[in-house]
Image (cartoon, helix red, strand yellow):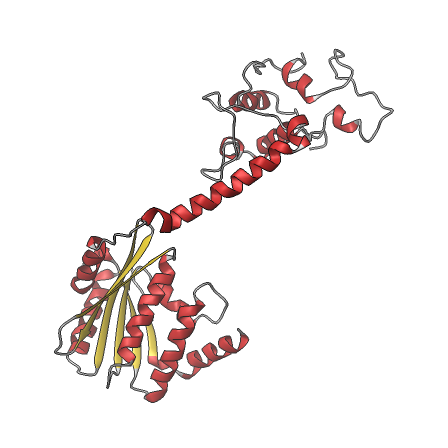
Length: 331
């Protein structure tokens, strides 16, 4: 990786005048005017090569379509699609294909690549730091090195363009990309969403099985119900069944966690460290202050806990009305 990084720095330092980035500005009218002038001028040069491309995602399938404009020749249309890849990776692949085709076209001296809201993808080509898209960026870098080395007249310009401005050349590609549909033989088993969901369920099922067999589950873990009176089960979606309800407050989240796992600063916990002290509850109705006693029976706390329906909503209400419970005295 250090050698690749060194070579990229050499490319930037040696050929800095042979590539450029044109970013989408606030003054869009002047930007489009300049873009039109450059495209018109470039289109009249036989040694020029213009690539307009767009990428979209449908049903976990990434589709990249490129329109290649050559002097006095029909437009060349290329289509690439892939499953289980990120949009940035697909864009870099489309850029790679466009550059490769341009560089291997005889007597090409100028290239324009126009991308919708993805100028950041082209910057990866010149990024010397490790990143996820180096397979394509390194390949593009090598081709650009050879391309720039041939002649100082060989240039490549990257222009940013958005579908919002409805620029004609890009609008045609954007429309084509949105209309293009890929039908897979087994789309559900090949899609990224399916693979992620399958792996997610596999991990959760393994965790549930292990947890059900543990002594901690039987003796310590407080089983709670949701609003439908069904047992709460772990989930990675939408913050999970617990965190999405208590995650808005650090204090509430900590105290609820202590209550659920029975690892709280109550006298039952202190008994394991200081066996000779008095561990009776402050209400003097129980010899040892236990979690169950605090939640269901202790008269010192407001009666907002329903022992017949252990719902997480009731636990949260109990903790909110008893702001000091399951907290360290010094906290």
